[in-house]
Image (cartoon, rainbow, N blue to C red; front, side, top):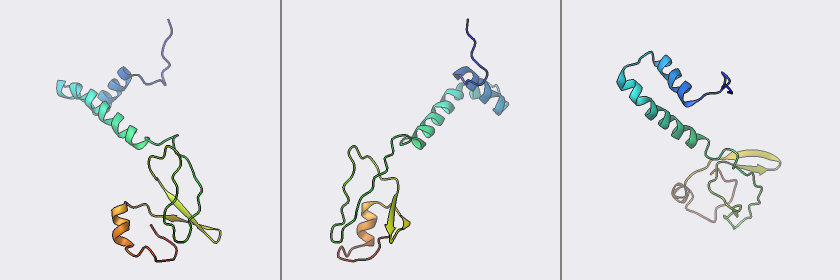
Length: 114
C-alpha cells in the first residue's frame, strides 16, 4: 500500500491544518471549513484565470485608425505597452465608457495615455 508523501496536501490534511491554525474545534467552525475551502478555491481561480492562457501580441497603431485587431480567441486585455522612439511606456487599461468620456475628440493626435 502506497503512502502519501508528507508534502502533498489532501483535503483531509487541509482540514486538519485549518483546525490547527484556528485553534478551535467547535462544531460551528468544523462545519464551516468546507465553505472556507470553497471560498478560497473561488478566490484562487479568479486570480489565476488567465495564467498560462495569456498571449503577447505585437501590433501597430495607425494615425486615423483607433482600432487594433484582437488575436484569435481573445478574451480580455490585461495590459498594453506603447513603444515610442524605442522607449516602452505602459498604457493604462480603462473601460470603453471611460475612454469615450475622456477623449471625446477622436481626431486628436499625440501619444495615448489610455
